[in-house]
Every structure is written in structure tokens, then in C-alpha cells.
Length: 207
Ligand code: ZN
Image (cartoon, rainbow, N blue to C red; front, side, top):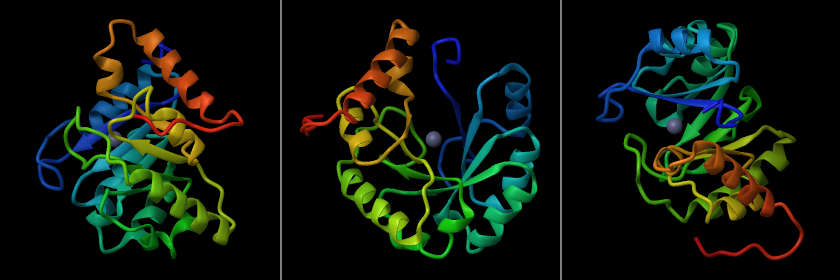
């Protein structure tokens, strides 16, 4: 994907517990770090981020994002990722309200909003994501926090303009890119679609 022009490499880590699927462990991140020249954005879909956040940070992740639903010790887990040398980010499932971020927003370098339920690729985009981005932007403004907002799940050329217009600056694309015959063209088209949402004028709500 980096040869195709992607800015970051998003790595989904699934533990068969927080989500049913299983994917990679820290050794994969170590290997990817040796071969990648773009930042590794490691999304931990696992049940124990307090233990595993620092482990993936030390394995070479540039960013480690953890789910608020996965831990009772979110504040400590985010701090431990930074202490281990990576940028901490927080992830919200589609049904999780923005208000959970009220007392930890200052600790994070990124907020990831899930636009599908985590665990499987190829799911359709959940449209309430747009309202959620608006609420998130309001909370960030009230706290004086300005960190990137990432959206993960069902992102494509059709919804990218409106996502960018709503404040998302990092778009994760899995199936949409991997189902394309030409990855470079697909990355370029997605980038252009997102940038078109930042132009003045109305943004289409068709997606
Ligand atoms: Zn992800």
C-alpha cells in the first residue's frame, strides 16, 4: 500500500475475544516496521489494551489506538502507550457516545470513529457516523483539542467527500482498495474524493 501512495499503513489487530476474528500479533508489527517507510497505525481490537498497548508500541507501532469499550482503565492504558514510545489514540464503536472522551481527550493524538462494527471487512458504512463527527468536533473545540479524526469502516469514494467535510482527516480503506485492480489509482481516487469535500460549496450527501 505504501507503493500505492497511502500515507499510513493501518494494521487491524484482532484477538478472537473482543472481536471474533483473529489476525496478527506484535511480531507482525515488528516485521512491518522493518519494511515500511510510512507510519504504522495499529488498531487494537483486543480485550486487554492495558497489557497489549505498550507491547505493540514497543514492537514498532507509531500510533496505537485502543477501544474505550475494552478497558475500565482507559486513562492509564493511553498513558502507558505514550510511555512505551508510541502515540496513543482512542477508538469508539458505532454505538459508543462521544461523551466518554470528555476526560481523556487531552491524552490522545488521534480519535478513531468506527463507521462499522469492528471485526470484519466489507461491511456497509453506518450513516450516523456523520452526526457523530459533528458532536466530536464540538467536544474537541470546547476542550481546545485539535487532533486528527480517523474514520474506519466502509469508506469509499462516495462517502469520502462528506467525511472530509465533516472533519475526518484520516480515512481507512480496506475492502474498497483491496478489491480494486489498481491500488495506486484507488488510493489516488480516494484522496481526490476526500479533498473534493474540503472545497467550498455543497457536498453531496449521496453515498
Ligand atoms: Zn481498523
